[in-house]
Image (cartoon, rainbow, N blue to C red; front, side):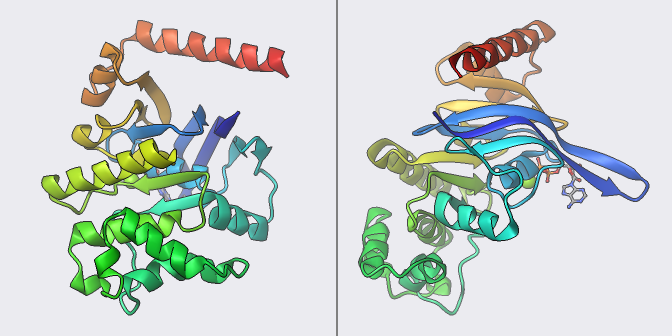
Length: 263
Ligand SMILES: Nc1ncnc2c1ncn2[C@@H]1O[C@H](COP(=O)(O)OP(=O)(O)O)[C@@H](O)[C@H]1O
Ligand SMILES: [Mg+2]
């Protein structure tokens, strides 16, 4: 069963008299253990899609299911609980609390859930996992950008989420540091089975994942597994030919039919 399943997901922003269809009917299934990238030009809807998948935004239309359960119609409180318990967020600007130590930052999400007697040890273990065990007492200003982002990754994992959503996680980092962040994420995916979705405009970053979804004007124009030539095309943003796009549509319709039959 898919961890995330979007069906016709749509987000329309009103803008003055007009409207922007930032996400325009996207259907997408993400299985447990996937490591994938969402690419596309600035304004193509990447952040809006990620925020919809993470229940930070409510869709205008369409359905979203997490672990097979629809989140449409959930109350604000229920959505907050889903975000807290099922989703780990990593942001471009790290978003660490400057007055807290690395360890306290990682423990922060625990404040909002039920008491966890082992919470502190779990947070320390996660800092070890991202190779920052020796920096637990440091504040963000005492850490490099790459270290801060690894703290943020540890924080995203502390509630053992179903999926980690990262919006341009390497956007503020030089390319060498970006590589270490991608190695950290790849290791978490490989060794712990963490499901990870990364939004990026960087082909180097996306090329390190197993699947690339490319957006244009709020729709999916390519969705390709690693290892295919189409994957390389999706990375480079080479316009998907109409035929290829049509092929995907038919593949998706076929998948929907199969799922409908299986129900
Ligand atoms: N809060 C908002 N209000 C109005 N329009 C928005 C808002 N957020 C995003 N948009 C518009 O939606 C489109 C997609 O934006 P976004 O999802 O941020 O794209 P990306 O992350 O790919 O750059 C853009 O045209 C953007 O201007
Ligand atoms: Mg964005």
